[in-house]
Amino acid sequence: MDPHATAHHSNRRKFIQSIAAGAATIGLSSFDEISSPLESNTPTHFAEDPGAWVDRIKGKHKMVFDVTQPHEIYPFAWPRVFLMTNKATGALEQDCCAVVVLRHAAIPYAMTQGMWEKYKFGEVFKAMDPATSKPATRNPFWNPPPGAFMVPGIGEVEIGINQLMKSGVLFCVCQAAMTVYGNVVAGSMQLKANDVISDWTNNLIPGIQPVPSGVWALGRAQEKGCGYVFAG
Image (cartoon, rainbow, N blue to C red; front, side):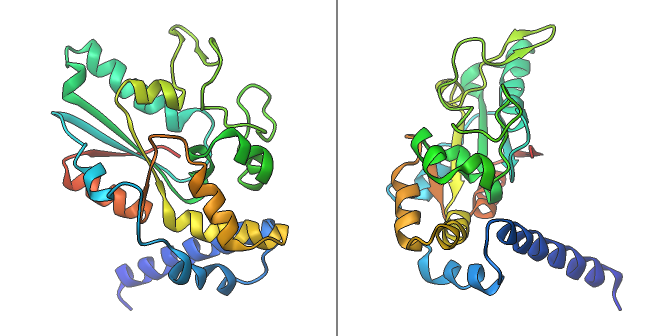
């Protein structure tokens, strides 16, 4: 057998197993239950054309940050480091563009505080609050208080989503993952999947663009000339 084909099948199997395992932890027994809604419930219309959002990726120095799961502060620290170090080496802010793709188990970071409380995102997605090291009951990176994030030798760093947006960072969230996990969470809470997905979609942080899928966004960003960083 072709060793490349063997590696491909192995990686695909691990990916499917990881989603199935995640579903099992929040009460869904069958992978079929989360694979079928992906085709039937994924919205085909968006508040803003995803293609128009992609066209906002401009500048000489461009980087896309791939965020697949909660990973301490890194998904939000790395975009700030990218901007800070470009500035330190003489690059103008308008010549730099950072893009953050929230996909897979990182989708709750795209949502407002009320959704974290209502759906217990900290527990469901194993998203810890950096201040307490316990499952977060709020979105730790949306409108953080002054002094929330301190780095030894550097001091306070502004890595809140609102702070990064102010610096021109572009954010998007995977609609396919919202569909899959929306069905999973709805099943565990005995709610209607469409109601949960609509609730999440209607409570995205203003300025975060829903896209058909995270991998779609990663591909489009790289077509625009972005370098790639895996951020969690």
